[in-house]
Length: 148
Image (cartoon, rainbow, N blue to C red):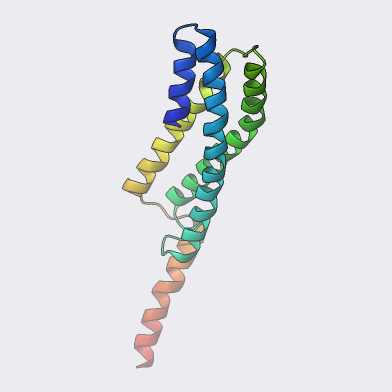
């Protein structure tokens, strides 16, 4: 996202048509790399949740991370055709305005920072599914102690 944002700002910077065309080409290359990595982040997050003690739906912070990652991936994938079309127009010598591309990377960077913060601080709070899971695992050790 930082590279995406930097390219948009560089293309907007001086009003140079060559820089703007180059920025569109580079955005097309960057988003082509970001899209599969974004999908991989979503899939690996789900897989990690399935095998880790945090679970996928047990803690609110994990659910929020999953939702934010899914939304960010969705926006990125929806932006892909727009960037590809802009790069084609820029290659033909008629680059569209880059101002419309400024919101996506800026918001995406904020979302990534929120996801990072949730990963580091792991705020407390169990979902109803997490509470049921915790009650089920708390009862089992007590029952096994009575049997002995």
